[in-house]
Length: 304
Image 1 (tube, rainbow, N blue to C red):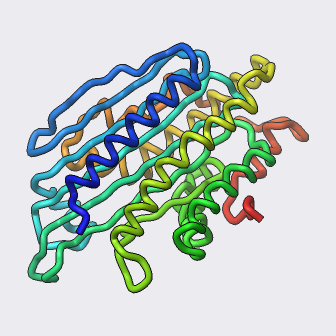
Image 2 (image 1 turned 45 degrees about the vertical axis):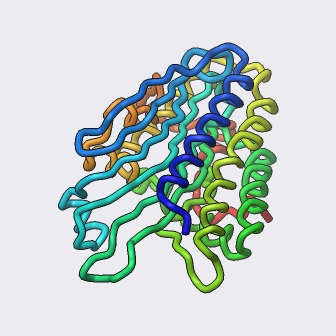
């Protein structure tokens, strides 16, 4: 049986790999690390990179926390136990260039001991990876989704269509009636079953984590040297505003971190360094901005 300590150690290794690769990709900035302890049990290491050649602000955070689960989370998870353990990696990268996309990745593991409701420990994996282009480039969107499909298909043929649909639903800014970006994959409460062992699911979780670097490196290098205008930069700030709205209103990881007394700087590292909100902004007809808005919707078959 895979232990929670083994899972946490593998996630730490993936954090190291990703940070080293992002520094190489940026070619200028380096991560700053801050180790922290959580009141109640556990802690983590937050790594932030800022003002680089490519990355304006990025975070690659690892945590392994434990202790007493708050009553609000016990109710939402429908559990009767207090003790919990959770470990994971969370990544958000905000690039300088408006034609380079924002990217988010998260892999996590959650465990509770057996309870009066079950004689078995409650445990599962969750996570996903999604892309938020300021401008949707259809060729890039197809590349992104096909790479995720390849990752999913290695483990189960139903993973990509199921998790892609889940991402479409999850990363929806309901009050705007638009998606945050072009989606990706999202999964939660993924546990062993008749077809997949705990080892299978753990390997899938790690594969999602290790898909991040080759995919994002390709997307950055396709677009990092394109010229851009002041109008395109202003559009980037507006799209960042939408990103911030989603994270503050809907994001489950943000809520979990706040409700478990997590470290506030690590929880809110996903917010962009600058974002704008314009009253009732309407893109010009026929513009790239209008085209992007038309592609921020659920159900597009990017991998087809």
